[in-house]
Length: 185
Image (tube, rainbow, N blue to C red):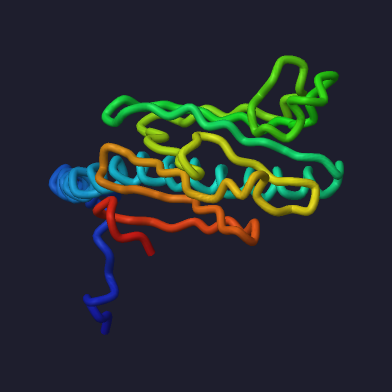
């Protein structure tokens, strides 16, 4: 005797029904609607964090160049007022380039070698650079801040996030973050 449980009906079509496909599409649409706002907020914060890390890395680069060349390396910052975005900074060999009197003044003088110039990415604002009252600093040939110009650089974006790169007397740069612009950790 044959068991009817093992007989398959070959007349039914194989595949998915319209209702099954519609349900899967609804689930995908729902997940996308929830995920897109989260992903879109990550972009500006990641760009800001990347810009802050670049400044930190360029402080290290300036220090290493000063030690390698046995000469001063300066960094000049161009800030903007928030909510404007932008700003930039330039690393240069502060050797006077023919005008010895201007060597080591932490100012980019005519003829000095520019090592790199960096502009802020979209939705990032370089809002302050204060090194003992100046928007410039650098390293001397021993790897210490030139002219004892210690202080910090602050970046901000429209998502209420701030990063600060601080330069200490020892020449050590430190990167910190804040969600209120006052308390950094």
